Length: 227
Image (cartoon, rainbow, N blue to C red; front, top):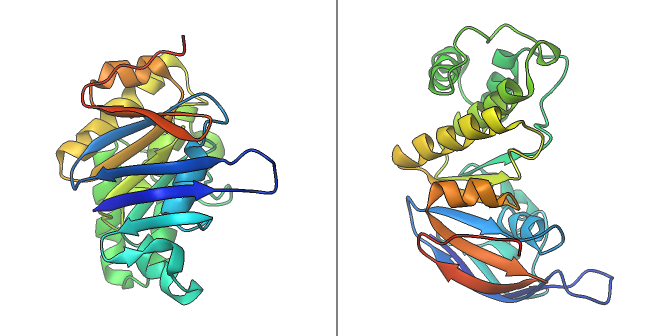
C-alpha cells in the first residue's frame, strides 16, 4: 500500500531532513515511526500526505505516485488518509459534532447521511454524549478523540497520527493508544509517529526507528529506547 523508495528531503538547511529512506507498509498494519525530535518523523508524514515533495526518491500510496500529483489530484489522495495531530486542530467555534460533520461536508457528502456517520464515529471513540459540546468544554483527551473521529469519518484506508499523545497525561495517552489499536483491529492501517518510548513498547507492534533522517532499524514487535 505505502512504499518509500530511497526518499530524501532537503530543506534550505545544510543537513537533510531525510536521507535515502526506504520501507513498505502493508494494508492493515500498525507501524510506529519513532525517533527523537528532529529525526525526520514529521517530514515523513508531510511527504506521505503530499504537504511536501521528496527531493529524491518516490513515495507511493496505492496507485498514486505522491510526489508527482498535481494540486487538483490531492483531494482524491487525501480521502484515503485521515490525519491526527498533536495540537488537535479543531475548529474552536464549532461543537464536537460540527467539527466532524465539517469533514464530511468538505468531502461532498449528502446532508442526509452526515448525521448517521457522525453519530457512528462519536460512538466509536466513546463520545456519544459529547457531540453538542464545544471545543473549550472538552478535556485534552476528549479533544483528541474528536480529532480521531474526524479523521475516521470518511472511512480512510490509513490513519496517520503525528505525536497524538504529546499533549496528554498518562491516562489519556493510554486511552488514545487503545483507541488507535481498536481502529487498526477494525481493518484500518495505522501509522503512529512518536518519540514516546513507553507508548511504542506497550504496543509491541512493528517499529521503524529514524535517527538524523535515516532508518536505523525496522523490526516487528520492536522496542524503542532513547538511550
